[in-house]
Length: 293
Image (cartoon, rainbow, N blue to C red; front, side, top):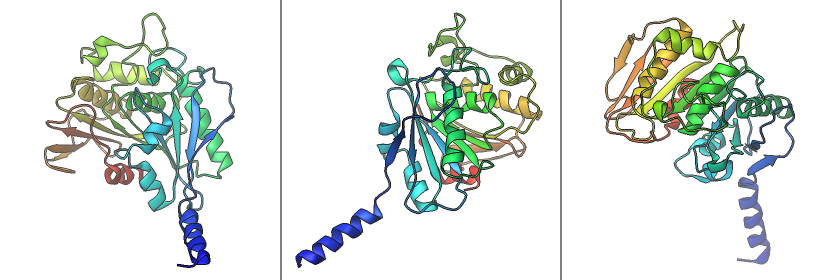
């Protein structure tokens, strides 16, 4: 092969893989949280692109989550042309703050506020479609996904979360930032549907607008965030939407063997994975379908 051919081959390879995870050093807003913003803009972006916010677990970061082959959102972005936002936690151990009032309140200045600011920045910067903003995350990222749905419902159209707890379940009695809650993680924070709904609604008092539809995944043998948290999360969002905790329909072995998919009206869906621990693997196809991507 001649030098010119080698050069052209390398240039073509470079052109097909130019997109990369990029940090945004100043995304604006007045949140006190120092959460970092990273974005991935694929080489071929759809016009008026949707945004998918992908929130990492503890002991992770935007960069490591992005490069994790089990987290498929880069592949989805490349295939369909939507933009992804990858927040990175500023906290020790890199769990998200889902315990302090600052993060459990609309415009409270905490991690949830910082991620909301990332969303508004991206909508403007990339001329993204503000009516198509979606959130997903696993473990601590799933907890934050629930918190964002409660604190910033006006920004988000749908959530697909893997192995989390209800919004507000990890609240710290001392008001501490990023505090672990053994009662909640152990599945002992049990409340009525009405109580859980009130917890979510109280994070944004007076808000009466649309709320994101919720897809909730959990494993039956989760020893980190007990399976009871699945039931409590279902209570919370069915309560917010004012529907029964009795499923309108359930499909066994969906989307795969030993998974059961239950719908609670059009806005709440639960997927319970028998024999699966922490956390349930990401299912790109089903999450994208829930988002309408």
